[in-house]
Amino acid sequence: TAYLQVAGKRPGVMLSSLVMTGLDVILDLFVGLVWKNGMFGMGLATAISEIAGCLVAILCLFGKNRMFRFRFPSVSFRQILGILTQGLPIAINQICFTVSLLVLNRLLLVYGGSNGVAVYSVLSSISSLCFCASQGVGTTVQMLTGIFFGEKDRNNVYETLKQGFIWAFLLNTVIAAVIILLARPVAGLFVSDNAEVTNLTVHAIRLNMFNIVPMSICVVFKNYYPCIRKLTLSILTGVLENLVLIVPVNYLMGALFGLDGLWIAKTVGELLTLVFIAIVSMIKSRRAGLEVKILSLIEEDFVLSDDQIACFDIRNLEDAAAASENAGKFCRNLGCPSGTVVSKKKGAGTFFIRAKEGKIQV
Image 1 (tube, rainbow, N blue to C red):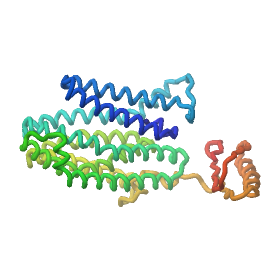
Image 2 (tube, one colour):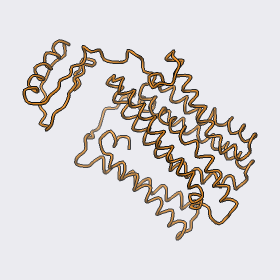
Image 3 (cartoon, rainbow, N blue to C red):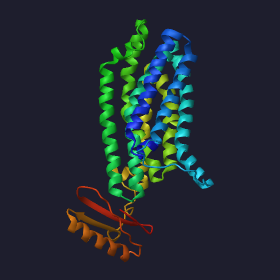
């Protein structure tokens, strides 16, 4: 899906997700109501739906109007290492999450018994649905930051991170408010035949929903850091969020408040992670505050100088001819080979030419 987004195939991303989710729901209903094969059937339904979503994505990749063409590359060890390195934070994050989940299940049995575990399974399903908004914002921040960081466009990196924070906060605040207000109807979708479990689920939903706003901000940071080559910080943030901080917090909150403490613990862990991020950002920037410039960890000199950028405002054919001539002069002054690019596009606008590592970027 990340590749489809870069290739401009966003409808393909949506179609793949819809096919995967829709087919999973249909097959789950078939397994539960018709086949009645329990957990094996549910697992098989999930596997089939994910394979179907993957096939849809592959078909989109080989469509007629695709941006990129595939060929057999000569892959080097350095490229393979780079791919593995970029995926390392996600892998470590999932391992830490699995370990913390085992600990949490043990505590749920201690403080809530089988009902506590059952309620958490409901919370997990609801959280997965709510996570869609955070993941959408996070992947968008990741894609745009990678582009702007590669171009040394510091201001747009700032703006991307800022917009990521704003939309993550707004979307998840609305989602949390709706789920809290509709906690009982939502709980009724999962449990309805046991009044005790239903009441416990409603209470747990309302307490647990406070975590999705700070969690969404953490998601933005974890997607942002690899794009600015802060891979270690991305890994450290994931380890703290999903293991080092949350496990002790679960034990402490459980000991102090029992089962309610476990529902609140995730919120406390996310907030502590954000405090850690803020402290690291201020230490590295040697400034106090929570401004985007500080949190971005981008150096002040990370920008192309004015003499490396040429801007041409083109409104008519005369402007285009003048811009072509001036662009040639700009290239020659920088010692870069100049060339001519003809584009038959309607409309007008402002075009930038950037000189970077001996190449001219338009």
